Image 1 (tube, rainbow, N blue to C red):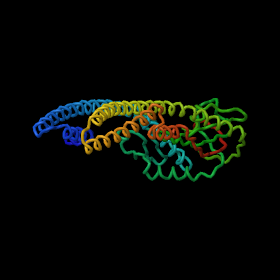
Image 2: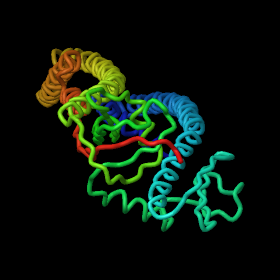
Image 3: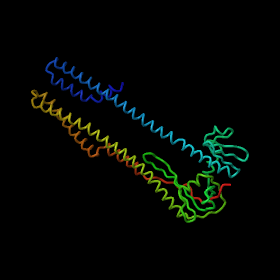
Image 4: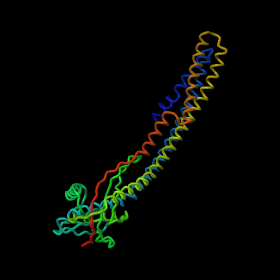
Length: 362
């Protein structure tokens, strides 16, 4: 590609400059200089060819790896998306149903992967696959009824609620429920909602509490008392369990990126060692030339080059030592950055504390 010659020149410019300087220093005649430059051109052409071939192999490998990784991600999305969309449709239908039930009778029917809501006046809404339900209005977040239901839910000022459940073990139960939104700002920022509920002095299992929230929720005029301290303690416990789950995922991500950072430092150390070996060879050659230099100008030129190579050698040795100890600037900066992401504490916002009663479906 067009980028290959540019990258090649950038990679070899310093070395070429040095080799050309040596040719001019060693050449005793114009013929020797021409022969040396011709041999150097052949070596550069060979290096360029090897560089281009290696670049092509690397590009093909990256493309193949990227292609397989992209395919894996899209397969995951393909497998997960239908389930997630169905869950969203059910939640939207439940929200709209609860909102409309305050003012009219609502009949709910689940069929063909969709939730159909029919009002007493015959108006019909459907959440999900609407093509199998001709005449029904498709529910989505921008639908006026859905927006009204969302606005009403956000404006809820408290007071007891009624949960509608067909779980006979819960019908007639009275208690309290609390929700918190926990935000994790780690490698992959995510927000999660944790829930806790009590009935009397007993905690309600998580799956039952979430099942109540997934069903119709209506306002209640009853006054319901519950143990607020116990509810808060259960919510903290639920948040701690949720954080432990997220931290397990975050630790695995940290392990992966730190392993990559280690490999990156190892690769840089290998490159630095190669440069050090080349510099030491050049330094030995310059030292030998200095020992036999005849003229003052030649000795000064060799001495200056020797000092430059000594400084380069010392700098490379320091770089290698820092890379081996993982004390170089890049390693320290990125390691601290990744660990900061891993151990940044989550933030929590209490969304709801409300009493409830559970009633059977009509």
